[in-house]
Image 1: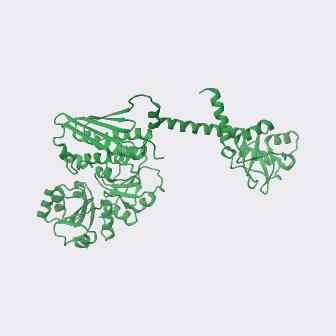
Image 2: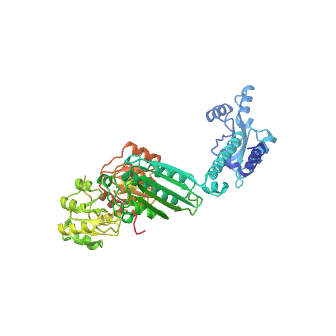
Image 3: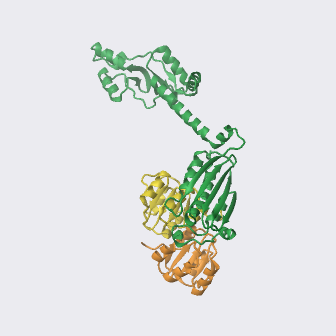
Length: 310
Length: 114
Length: 117
């Protein structure tokens, strides 16, 4: 980022942000009858260097730690706030842009300004230079995160990349018979697709169908691979395994058909619903199998939009 | 005790086998046969989505009042044959496990106490 | 139905620690076969199951099911609890049976997921 751009971004923010966005709202106030000695304790206790003076809801002045120090220096210990406070105070409205506060700080040399409501002129907050810096930094951080998220979105990436063919490839190895690790590919893919900004419904369909395919690899084969390709208009998932193959593909696709061994059934699978489920959640499904060699399943989920639900 | 005939009528269950004039002591819902063998009690009505022939053997063993197959499932042919042979009531519903159990519960059939 | 209400009706304990009791759960579903849940389960539901292994958590995760209640006093192991926490899934456990749990929730107005949808 070059310097001029940074400067202008901050300048932009000082117009965009309102005083009420950065001011301190839960403010302490003091009464003008308070003694200067008590003021010292009050400032110390609240860790502040100045405080608005309010009598019956009305802002009457401002008193700071400097006024307190001057009193001590002059041995003026019996004074009350009313004698020492600044009454010639300048205020700002809460709905003014931040830049007004900055200009006022520059001109006046004051350390703080009370903020009042335009409606009833009541005190609603206080602002110091450090509140302004904190507010701008916070806004910059949010803006940076938003920009990062936006850049990450799959739709955005596809729009930015210039090529005749673009896809992202995510590959997962699936171990045979390892029921503890089964599901890691599907949940990994789910997280990845979601992070890339695909809609929750699309992500869910891809995750469920991949999960069923993964369970099949773990349950029936000697291991395999799941490779997902995120393309501009679809997700294509290729599932291959080394295994016994499926002798009768048509029969295997029938809901309820299963030759699952007992251990799979007791684990909550093997009811002959896996392949029908994959079909249910995908737009296209192609299954090719060679007995004693393995099975290749290709599923496609079309993308209607890329965004996370919003 | 609730009569199975009343249940069939009130919940619009389709009877495909067995004599339904019998009493139901409570309900048990599970899709794991080993769990049913371990925990179902005599005269329970069993709710499951399993259609495998082994469900008849389990119902027989536990002397269950009947089996309700959920989510529109049809018993396998061999299961049906066996159920007829053993006089086990097989009942069908389009409803989910959650819903049919809920409706049975409203008829006064409760789960077994642990 | 608020999650806290479900917990009360089922006399259930939360095993994943802190959770938001105000979460609205719209649908109840129950099965011990995970493919059934994958097929008909809906987001915003509570899954009641007696199956107790890591695949229950994976199933809830891929199907966007936020709450799982294990019945008959089954307590998930640490690996399951950790996986659930990472994926923001609340795990409950009750001593009631599946039948009693479904019955109580249905009677108190929780809706069911359906294969007819």
